[in-house]
Length: 262
Image (cartoon, rainbow, N blue to C red):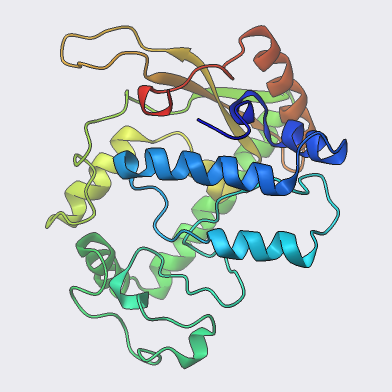
């Protein structure tokens, strides 16, 4: 990589500190980020809407002060609103959606088959069968889980769980274009049963890549990250940040990179 070759030696706060000390400019960081996207994105297809000119204009117009001033970042194409930019949510249904959804041509009607993934459409169809009684029962179950976790954290500061139940499956095993919606959700929760409950309780949780998988006969690649999840009591993000910082110092992972990033 040309330009600012040390770009990947820093995290976001480190890059911002370089900008603050005028050791590197926001333009240098943006050029370095663009160079890496252009080199690696053909293999991973992660950046679906390059907004390079938007970034350059933001710099030219003057960046606001803040802890990450001058640091380029990615914006998720799902609820990450940016003025004047359409957000498609990865769906044909929203492919032509303007920034103001009130003027979307599909306003007032549900999506049709083919406009969203098969699993999304089928899950929506299942949702139409949910009764008020079903909804109340589900809400009560979520509240009960929250009370149980509050009781747990009266004694313990942190709950430790695996992040995932298995190593990463092959691409395509969890496929939102599957015809069997029940099989899709069975696979999702077989793979990731540990994180969803804390979406329900509203507790802070953090996932840390503390280990790597050894070579396995059924896999050609090695070094898959194995992560753990730490969960704290409601509102206690500070404990998680302190503990995560100590664990990162003891078992650093900053220099671990997949082959595509080499």
